[in-house]
Amino acid sequence: MPRLEIADDGFRLDDRPFRIISGALHYFRIHPEQWADRLRKARLLGLNTVETYVPWNLHAPRRGEFRLDGGLDLPRFLDAAAAEGLHVLLRPGPYICAEWEGGGLPSWLLADEHIVLRSRDPRFLTAVDEYLGALVPPLKPYLGSEGGPVLAVQVENEYGAYGDDTAYLAELAALLRRHGVDVPLFTSDQPSDLAAGSLDGVLATANFGGRTATGLAALRAHRPEGPLMCMEFWIGWFDRWGGVHARRDPADAAAELDLLLSAGASVNIYMFHGGTNFGFTNGANDKGTYRPTVTSYDYDSLLDEAGDPTPKYAAFREVIARHAPVPVEPPPAAGPKAAYGAVELTRTAGLLDQADVLGTPVTAGRPLTMEELGQSFGFVLHETDLAAPGPVLLHAERVHDRAQVFLDGQPVGVLERENHEHALAFTVPRAGARLAVLVENQGRVNYGRALHDRKGLLGRTTVNGAEPAVWHSRALPLDTLDALDLRPSDPGRPPVGPAFHHGTFTVAEPADTFLHLDGWTKGLAWINGFPLGRYWSRGPQASLYVPAPVLRTGTNEVTVLELHASATRRVHLRDAPDLGATEE
Image (cartoon, rainbow, N blue to C red):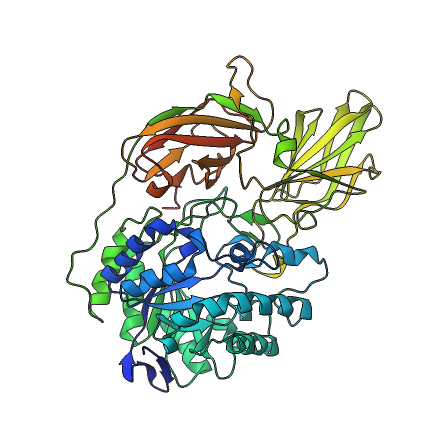
């Protein structure tokens, strides 16, 4: 059985010295039909291990439910890794960061306003206990102790950057053991946080992307004996809306990898393959200003978003070959791409007009949060009737995250959390006018103390200083679009406000492609019901990746939800992406 041992002088596997040369790829950011391809490319690089987080929020969309199907079929992913002869490092959290929505913590935890996340709060630990009780038993056959590929399991994630309650980490380690994890446990922290985030009797690893000698020295000072390992060797970075596309010179990153391996350390390359934040799954950061992450998680990785080798792949393969065996097979080539051309979107449905088929209103004395409505992703629509005509000042204490305001269906303005906006003035033309506020969850914060990130209109929302007595709040998760009443578009009457636009195109042979939305403003897109993710003219990202398995031979459907307005009713499927300008 391939059982990993942690000795004073390093790792041992099957009682022989072993160095972990791993790469990160997240099964939940990759279409499941492409898992085998990405894992094969990991082996061809010279990796002997892959690493993945586990997103609690996707596996348990509601309390008491647990999914291991479709793109969340973790046992299938582990089987695919084993088929390539790869070991696995498993990082189940409960908190994972990962630039992922809420850091992987399920939104239903926030229905209790007073819960203390990432703590010994019994409400939190009870939920974690339920999660691990559902996750671990199906994975038992995949642990190294049972002959499976999982070498080790992480406790929490970069906890030292968040807190210093060692007893909390000990509770998590005990829960993992109680539910049947009998392989080595490890923690991972940035070098300055090792003391706060480590646990006695558990392997400590460090995260860094440069200053390799300094990072390893800090780890050795913290743990004088045992293996040296960089659990997240950052070789690129993620992008945010309104920023630039991150790039790192391949030669610089490869030189740091050579230093790390020359020191005898083990490594997990973050990211080997980044993938995509499909649907609404991107996270956000808030260090005083809210910054949502883009749809692409390309990360300037060794494999790009579509799984093709980048110059870093060749540079890293050359470095790894100096320190470990690399397969004699040639490195992989880029996969096929297709340009299916322009697609006319000829049918339309207004979102506000379709609200009744997309969600059911709940009446209360204030706007209800998404969490109170049992909702994780998407939008919430808050509506109230205004009693009198005349000037109005709408004030929202906290907008989480972006509110579009309408009066009798006509747009009157936008309030953005990112811009610290709270007030909007307009004139009400008649008594009984309907005020509607469409709030988008742009991604729950995934790092730092702002994790308790509820969505909707929070705090007091007033009209001319008074709180309306009645609000109707409607969850619009948009997890299915089947009920939409799409009708032929009228070129002479463009829709006002948010609208769905639909069209079809024909595919002779499915291949990866990229949806470009030139002239569109902000929204989301689906192909054949598969949620590609968000687009925004703010950039840097200007295209959405379309995995080949999403397409089918013959007629295919594309649906775009444009939240504002578009200068065109046409989208384009091209054979290359546009991830935006870089700092170079």
